[in-house]
Length: 426
Image 1 (cartoon, rainbow, N blue to C red):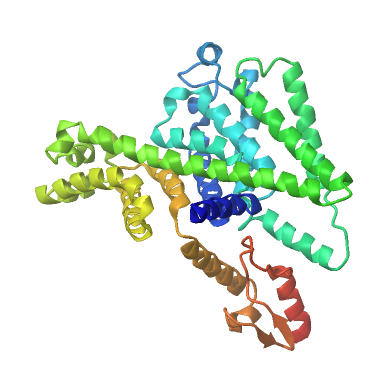
Image 2: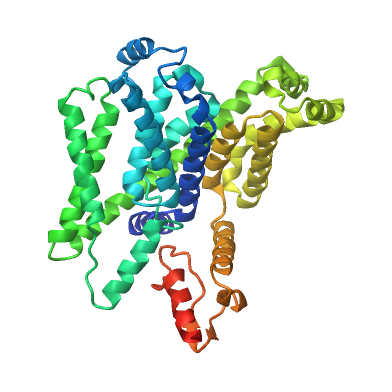
């Protein structure tokens, strides 16, 4: 009983002290923002037919549907061409900024607004990948997805360095941004644009108020206790959202697997054969013919797909088995992207699967990209060892760190290191 109590206390303390899974959350942020960005760019020439005034689902029909189901979409605030073009371009910009991790709390909210506005405007244009993106866009709002691999993380390291030097860092961009957005949100509310759906307006006001409270506490509090309390609340909300994302991914696979078991084509091992010969899902007909030439291969792929999807939620209790099935599912989605011509569905599912990737693997992957970035930016850094500190022209250059919670963080970012090494060489 004492061990159980100690374990529960340790788990609660871990959840409250830091944002769990910072690398996994960053991969989810990057994955879903990149998926939506690539989709918007690919469909840019066809945007009028998909979500604009020229689409088969006219503005009047969309307005009637939204009034009946209470969905949120800012596209229906006006039927003008300029409003549509502006919102579409803003959705692209918000995706890019969230991908880079600039003001992730704000950009995650705006990213959700862009996704919901476009998808709810033409609900019959989506598929399974759009549904996953729809849900994950809402969940991302509750996560602290900019702790690593983001411009926010770099700004936080610089702020820590300023505090270490006895300086008080100032942030004028954040308050100005939230002030402008709060004014626009107030105008939209007073104009009655938020009357249909209650969840999204309530979420927008809640996030705006929480961020305003965060800034006021950091600005006016005489001690660190109020800010620490808000940090604990943010960590708990983040952990809850991360748990919901994991449960959502497991539910998707479990539901898909158990529904497949009930189908006769999945039971006799021939289900994979049919989509490979449908014109809609055959961008490479010769490749589909090659894959279905062997009946044994079709049967193994059919049964293997069902087995992996049904078994995956139960493998979370064994790390090694989970990693094997995770690699198989990511490979399966990559094959679906190429063979069936569903790249965005596959990217969305791979981004959802990333929540289960091992932290050690993600850290090694981040180190690889950091070294590659340093190698590209400076010929001087190409000669430096990657794991140890060595002298370069009499200047100590530390190895890059990811800034994970609980680990020491190098306050000098790579740009400052390159500049310092350059001065030393001169």
